Structure formats: C-alpha cells, structure tokens
Figure 1 (tube, protein in one colour):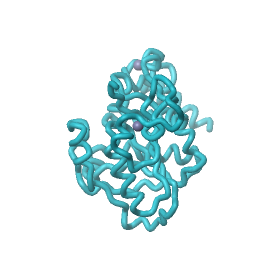
Figure 2 (cartoon, protein in one colour; figure 1 turned 135 degrees about the vertical axis):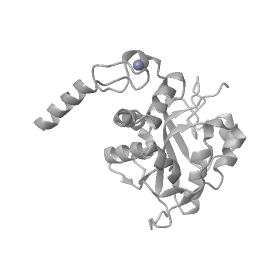
Figure 3 (tube, protein in one colour; figure 1 turned 45 degrees about the vertical axis):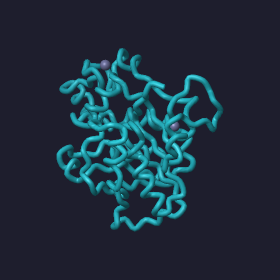
Length: 243
Ligand SMILES: [Zn+2]
Ligand SMILES: [Zn+2]
C-alpha cells in the first residue's frame, strides 16, 4: 500500500494529471478541470421513457420522444450520463483515440449514477464491440473498459465478447441518420463460442456515444433473438438534437 502511494505520487510528479477535456494540468486526477466541469451537461429526469432524451418539462413518466414513438426501439431503455457537445466531445475523442484510459473510473462513476434504475435488474453487462481490425489499431475497446469497471462496482457478470462485430462498418460519425441505420444492420452477432444461456436474462449494453440509437438497436435486436428477457443500454454521452 505504501509502495502504491509512493508510485502514485511519482507518476503524478512525472506525468501531472491533465484535464480530460482541455488538457490543462489539474491538481488531482479527477478527470476534468473546474472550468470544463462547469461546461459539461449531465442528463437526468424528466426524459423519454425509452431513449432518455431529456424533456424540459415532465410529460409523465411513460412519455416517449418523437423519435421513439416514430420508430419503436428494439431496446427497452437507454440512459446517458452526459450530453455529447463541444466539451464532452473532446474528452471522449481523447478517451477513444489518445490512450486517456485513466478517465475510465470517473466516466464509470458518472454512468453509474445515470444508470441507477438498472442496477437492481441487470444480470449481464455487455460492451458494444469494435471490429477486430479496429480493435487492433486502437488497442482497446473504450466501451469494454467502462463495462468492466461498472460490472465490478455493481457485482454483475461481465462478458466482454458476448457480441461480435462481423462487419467493419464505416465510422458512424460520417453518416446521415438513415445511413447509420443501414450501416449497422447485420453488423453484429452473438459470439458462437460463448455458450451463455440468455433466456430471460436482463442484458445491459454499454457504449460510449449514442447518436441515433442505431448501434444499440442493432445489438439489442440480436440479443432479443437469442432469448434475452430485456435489453437496456447505458452510454457515456448522447447527441441531443434540436426539437
Ligand atoms: Zn479543462
Ligand atoms: Zn426517445
């Protein structure tokens, strides 16, 4: 323990903790500096019962947003910790592409709060997978890092490779809304090697960013086909559109 403390101090001295969003040096590895903390938008109630889209006023606890009433989702519920905006975007891109994996613990803490309604019922935590080729170039799957910490915190079964991405889809970021739905259609499968009985199980999918819901929806569809009782999703951030 003493050695671990000395090591931490040494690491902080050599590599002082920086804000995950703007890169400023901060006093403690709390993830973000006070300025950036003030700019982050945390999401909560009232929101769409299904996708968690925030409402300005409460419309009743069963209210759905326009997108969910227009296109019923294959997942039961999705909740997000943050709004995906200029401030959270820098932080999440750094987390995905620049090895800022030290942010995992703080992100998991935020997600744990956003997903509080899931912790009683969830049986298995499953990350949205990367295609093996992308995993090779990035070296880690950010969603799997988050799922692992959340599963440990809440004493849940964690199956990192329950889902496989069989199509190396183009990055969703470059696509239109309808393009995103087409892009992920048929992209996932349940890993044939994982002989887990999903009958009636409550699955909690973990992902970093929810844009149109197409990815989470595609994963949920596959899990339901394999017998999952419910599929919910917990993401770090979600895109909010006007209206
Ligand atoms: Zn900052
Ligand atoms: Zn919705």
